[in-house]
Image: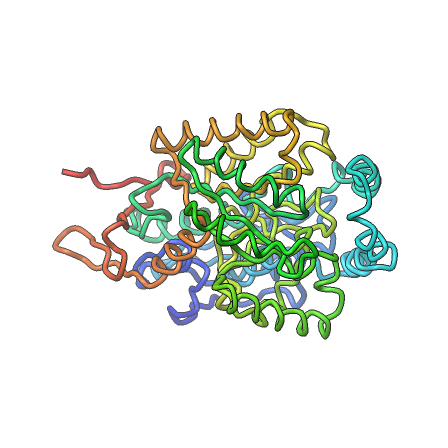
Length: 456
């Protein structure tokens, strides 16, 4: 038995590909397991209910592979799991709802953690580095998400596309390309400002970015003791973007839901007062189930892989995605602090590896650096090398470098665009469609490849 829900329920597939709804022929088996767990599909690790072998409660060891449970019918592809459920579970880190994850959350907000954040401004970087290295000492043993980039969601949707194409007899399927003007990927630069040293270095960093013809988003702490917001107009005057960075960066935003709701209200007030649309929490703390309290357009607080963050987990995708009405722009590369002070790496090697993996999935190359940590000549030289590499990709037409607000506007506009047939061809309709491109997914053996029509 199989279940083909109404087309409106093909949300994950349609949101990702923006193809005509009649082509989104993805159903799920009707005999899904009663409880969710981990399983494998085409090499992608998944979390949810599955058909056939029961899923595993642990991500380690042997987990069942349900790939052979896929059925291709004349009506479409029948997958041995619910595609929307699994993609949501991964993106929103619902796989982490377990006793172990609960213990991690409780200890991450414990008295020791609170004490650390209370005295953090007084601690030299060397002391902070030692304490964080001690806390993260087991990061290399974490089996999931996959370091240094986890593309489970993206590979899963591409595998679903392959099954759909097989059900269509190999006919290529049109969809609205991910980025404007056919860009193969997207890059956004963001700078989180934490203290007075960083605030004082903002203008120099703006000039450094501008020397490569780039602009960045600066996240400022609204209740900063350094009156961070007085710097906002000077930053915006250079065409850069300003967003909110937590409330006061004390590590307690998500300590309890009651406290979060009170703080979210103040964050919303600051967003209205300062004309801000985006947000990033301190230390990448997050609870996506509570995001409906934000009256913002986009968030930038969810890492792709959070092995080196205080809160473990990760969204397992390199693409933007919606959490309710909030657009998540995930962090897909290592933070500069982690690179320099946790890993002791003063090269762009890790960033290059991550960028290569992201580009394979045509994803978002999201970069966080801190003015506070780029003051030193050694750290700044590494950042300059990264800018050179991004500039080469941009100049070669391999990435669209944009501000978070621009990406938000594009992704929301893309969700409202539709494909319409024009004779034997397809065209994109809707506001902003002049920058949209019709792409095609087709099979090359068992793999999905993307292409465009030739431009006359």
